[in-house]
Length: 223
Ligand SMILES: Nc1nc2c(ncn2[C@@H]2O[C@H](COP(=O)(O)OP(=O)(O)OP(=O)(O)O)[C@@H](O)[C@H]2O)c(=O)[nH]1
Image (cartoon, rainbow, N blue to C red; front, side):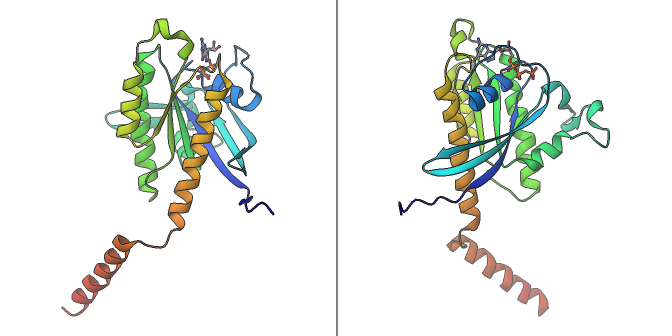
């Protein structure tokens, strides 16, 4: 016996970001260790098992082209027309399905970085609505190999991640497997942390909250 907890875990991951930032390149690099250059527009869910800290983890990764995803009008998120058919899977469904998110922008594309803030807003709104705070999210600045064409500073990515309580990595799906692996390992650790936090017994704050709720109810009952 090694004493390691070998229980297998499963987590659903959605990879999001604007067109051509390298979502498929990142996903395929993680799954196959290879960079193949062109990926097409196919929406796919991949299942892949990895071992993190001695524990096996199955990730179901949903990679979808951005053009099928969302538009943002007057503060509301809308799914695009082609996503409204009954058999199609909407943006909201993707958000509900996911246990964690990889949000990708290109360091050479300022607009793709600006979109990350909007994606964060919509994810947090959906998860908060479902009572799930602190959803695990990793922000990834891709195409690091193209640093001569950089328009987004590393510090900007890091600050955004810090302000939204997310992890942050800059990677090159084209040139480096290891940094891509770190992205998914980082997310797995976050998912584990959030699951074990969900199972923890109520801390002192939780107990005070429940007692206040009980006493408040008694006061209203006696009126
Ligand atoms: N130089 C460089 N090119 C990359 C990198 N990652 C992806 N690319 C290229 O960027 C282009 C878009 O990559 P994709 O992986 O298809 O991007 P995507 O975000 O999945 O795009 P959509 O499917 O349109 O949403 C392709 O030509 C890739 O070869 C990278 O790290 N460095």
